[in-house]
Length: 487
Image 1 (cartoon, rainbow, N blue to C red):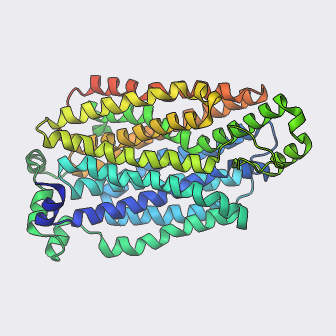
Image 2 (image 1 turned 90 degrees about the vertical axis):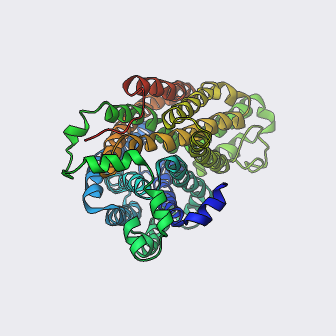
């Protein structure tokens, strides 16, 4: 039976729920991408202080987000498990929409840090709520696929942002880029409140068929776990931390989430820097063919130069690319990675492979691809698009990995603690994000002062390439098999 005919027979309301989560995740990443895209514009406006301190001040603003995001994830997981998916998701989205808009009123490093922290605290609710909704609405064999679909919203948000934000900032000022992207999320609430409910409530209202309801609850091990949990007692964080399964998720998130954060906040700056470097190299090699004064004036007046091939004082500079297009391309490819990441284990399970082996094998495959980024700096000297291609491979592999590591939580834990465990692991990922933000700020500022910032990026790419295979090995040692625990 194919996918379409199966949905037609048993019903498809669960995919409507998946679409809602996808939309929220898209908005989540649209809002958080604005800062990285406007980094050079904000630096030129003096938001990050004087030249010589801007990389460090920018990394401090990013760290403000990460600290608040880490705290928010732990709180959000508990709150969402307590108040329920519908209310918890709505509260989070209201919070991050207003926080995103608030950036327009910040014009200094400290005020940006405040609004960034507010955004991190509220955006933390997205993945615990989304993961809990998937656990409530999908049987185990479809969860990685559903997670991959909604998680691809992170990539869609990251595609839409570079195609719109720089141009909004150029036309109306950078403040409006934050206001307009922040306001979009408020419209989502009307659809969420109108459509979302538990499977039991939707069955009672006639929206979900009996066949779909039974299909959603078709995992026998989960039914047995629910029956065994006769007391329905609340589970503390300390209890959850006593399980190796929790630590496997923590380790996996701690090592791999920072890689996504790094590319999210530094990719536009890296590509813009590559453009500037190629322009200056061409100027040094062909001084007679370039009006140096006009070119330097152009670069000074166009921070974050977008790379129009023939637009600097009428001169063509080989190797210069349009970085907004490149960023959009990277996250477009990542979107396909997210969907494929969920599809592969589903395909393996449907082919008769044990669910544990299917998940482990898929994650091992995805952990190998990021090693390609080890060649990014070298390839970038040949052609910037080659560096873009290797970064796209890493981001696509991360999206595929992410679809499965989220699903391991519902594989191993009862539904009532899925949001809490997701929050704990997400906090670990955010702490890892703080560390890489701090390291990137120090490292890049050091090499920028030496005039060799590309060396700093090369060091960071080594970290990015090796993180996933390290995470897979440690997770396998902690939990050889993703088996449902009994609380």
